[in-house]
Length: 203
Image 1 (cartoon, one colour):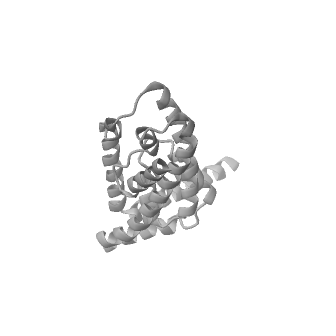
Image 2: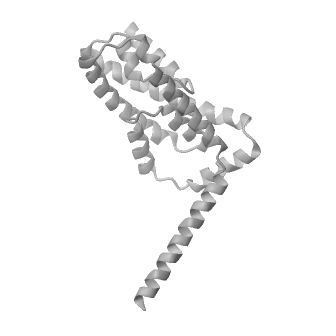
Image 3: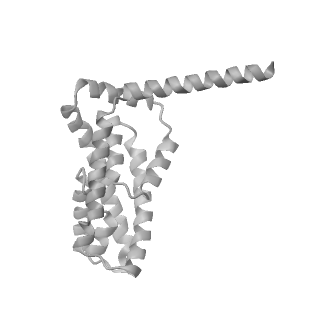
């Protein structure tokens, strides 16, 4: 029971951090859980990771507002309005499959928090995806390698953390007004050309 509580706290605190978050399956393995306890430990870790990421999204949305300019706020507001009619199923699918990628999940939740998208849908998808991917990786790790503290703070994990931080910073500094206007204009032009081509073919 004490080991599960320690796991819950460790994973929760790790996922509240905005970067350098070790995967929860690594923490399960590092803390010495036996294969027969993987399902229960994974359930606890996935729930803790989801709560931590949810909290990260919430406080990121609050903190970012104090550190960005009015122009950046307008830019993010434009992005939010553009995706205002979000598709819940699409949000679920993107979040679910994102958990199987090597990219830090912090990126997903920080951006979701800043844009103020539906965090409940993303959290449910994240929990399910994390539970499944953790279980697969735990069983692979159990057969092919031992986990040490070096694995948790490996160059790959640090590099991914820095990359994730870079993506978030880039996201905040992109002029979404200009980007979305260009995309809309390009799509409008493409549709006009397509309609004109069809009109010519009918002649």
